[in-house]
Image 1 (cartoon, rainbow, N blue to C red):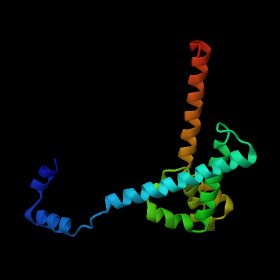
Image 2: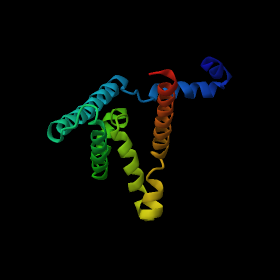
Image 3: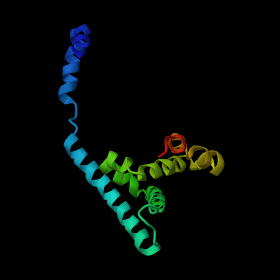
Image 4: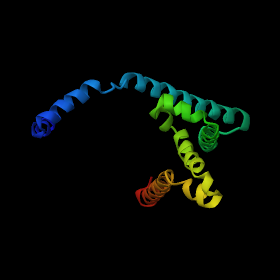
Length: 159
């Protein structure tokens, strides 16, 4: 299909397309993947260390340590976003910083910081969940569906 489009271009357009293709900046895909992998892995390792901290000092079990760990990671990402550190990490790592749960905290607080000049209610409050609102909605709905399926399967399926 790309060849069909190119055939319909005039000779000047084809010449410009080749000119543009020669001068296009090549993206370092392998380097970006390695950076994302390493930074994402480092974020997850920090999360695991926080989990161990909660299990050792606060007597959480492996089943109950998830919630405080996630809350701590989101809180830390919000603090680092407010200080401008998380933006530098995201610039270096790309998707490696956006995929873990810390990306959620960054998305929430970035929208709040961006609209703080409009006031606390109409600026920060109204815009804080603009990007993250769909994530919260989907997570809540998915949890409801899973709980409903589990309830039905337990009640009628004998699980």
